Length: 109
Length: 138
Image 1 (cartoon, rainbow over the protein chains, first blue to last red):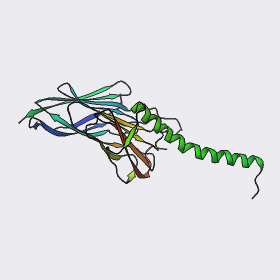
Image 2: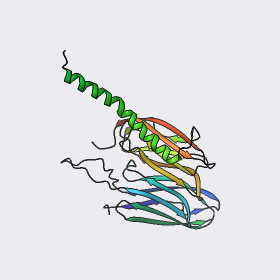
Image 3: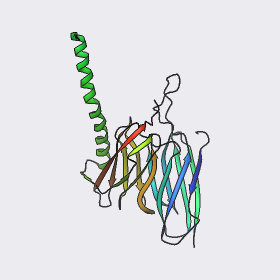
Image 4: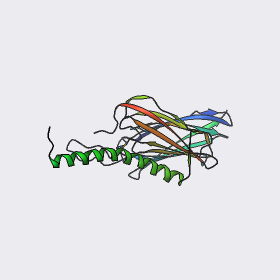
């Protein structure tokens, strides 16, 4: 597991039914590309988050495959439909098999 | 300046390599697009790709891709050592078929977005980004 991985998610607490809301996510992660070399010329092995999935009440919102060309601390902004109150789950999959999860509930009102 | 036969041959080989290398980079992008589309024709336009004209730092270049009703969008950086950047798949709860992220670019190059539209057809857009400082270490 990469050190200091911390997911941060910005989700509105409330939305009107049927609204489209903008979600912003950021996860601190070095996203080592596997292209860089250290001071003695050895290649630093690749260590990235390779997949990011967002679901709302079990239904998929967005599913992203990440390549090493995604910047350090991967940031994503996208829109989600909110038909009813529920919980949005965010899942990041690391190269080393770790899974980072975050969940936010959204109320109608 | 006189060249020996050996030097001339080396120069020729170098020049040949120079012309072949960029061509190979493009072939990799074409291969990736073909893999994504399954060989189907790709129309130009119909995809929104927002990227800065000039990026000062190739380590974080903000981009936005979107296509009305798209089911999936693949983003490629044609001039990176490994062209794939990301593939976005939109589910039933997506409010709009667009997303923003930050990417790494090794140098001045074209960013390409290929979208699979709702009717199963494919569209593409590309944009040239000038990069002042490359983003691949090195």
